[in-house]
Length: 129
Image 1 (tube, rainbow, N blue to C red):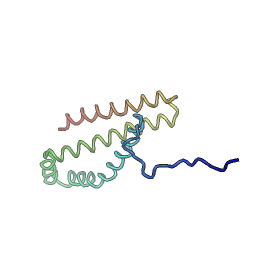
Image 2: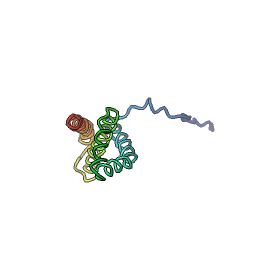
Image 3: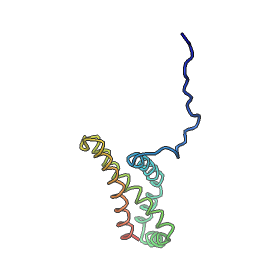
Image 4: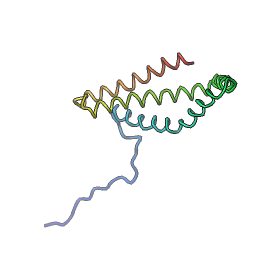
């Protein structure tokens, strides 16, 4: 009897760019990214709220600063992060409550998360711009 064993060699480095994720995988990754963006933006958003409520002068200065296109794009990105995180959170809640009975429904819901969050971002972005 031979004692030769076949040993499988595992890759030393995982090539993440070669992995094909389903749509739900991208929604999951974007959910995490949007959560980090919201967490890191929280001090800035609280500062903006503070400045808007402090006095009429600080509010006027804030509105002048927020007319800059770069700041508008940053706020639009934070709006997308909030809307995507919210929609994906509702999807995960529906999965946890067994409202999405199978994998097909869960994958369709992940596509809806992407579409609805982008549409809501576009509508609110145009309205706020």
